[in-house]
Length: 452
Image 1 (cartoon, rainbow, N blue to C red):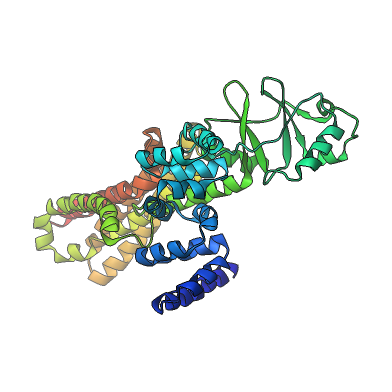
Image 2 (cartoon, helix red, strand yellow):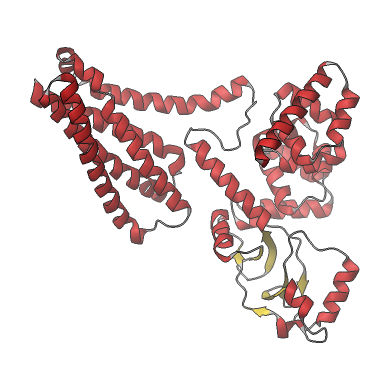
């Protein structure tokens, strides 16, 4: 319900702003944009064609550029930032969280990144260079460096006095980190413990020793799994020497989960997870053509299998009518298994220790589904076409293809993961090719043996 209201609000705002732009009421549009939340302005920009988007960006107060850039999808954000000068980008990135700063710069060409880095002040440049030194998709790339560290010998009263003078805490702070003089993490102190402890005791007497920490090179999806399993709000990040280098907060993890879900969904269609809906025609065509070309090759492979049985098809026209049923059913069954296994792998449920059992299970399911739908389709075809042998042919082909679909659906993601290939990106195409080829070959091959 809330999402529906949000979409209706943005639609009404977009209509009002477009009408004002068409009438040349630029000052009115500027005031409207000024009164909107950064997330709403970002959604408005993402919902606008490129030409309108460029004009809207020029009307937005530069003081809000940084907040809006943080909310934009990667493709839209990069397009806007490429049109800005290095000094403008540097102003927008000023005082931004380290993880957001790294993400902003990562999508830009290296030359532009260097130009922007020279425009940043010394502190922001150092933070950006440090974050960019870590690989994308690692804990180091998504962490923040805004941590509060304590020494173990300091009393609770001193800590409380310091925090009162500071008057603020980094966002999503639930824990303070205890380090020794070499900056090695030795403990954590939760805010509830801090507030309820005797002011005269030292931190080392109430801190949690040997805290769980995240390695700086841990993949971000593994980080997300840890947060989910352990119900963390924040977690410290350490390097190989166990030195505290930053922290990851729950808002970063939510972004990781959302982006991973979008990636899986868009990859199955051969699209980038952050692709701009209103990108220029040529740019969108170029991106989609690659995937369409792959699909064309797989379709040609299936057609070549059909061509092997041209003589059979020419003599029994009914086979051409029924030829799509078996591959279609196999494709649906295989994609059910493929989706289930990819989800299980993402959640960490599938591992080498249980993959053999899973393969056996899906083979059994494929066999039972094959029996059920083979009997059903055989009965329908035999009654429809008054041909018992034709029903036997399509039943056998259905059984074979359902077993092949189950086997392919469970093994493809496992094999592709071992080969460092994203199953969500290529799994469905390969699976469809297998079920098409096996289904057509089983159906027409059996028909050739039994009916010709």
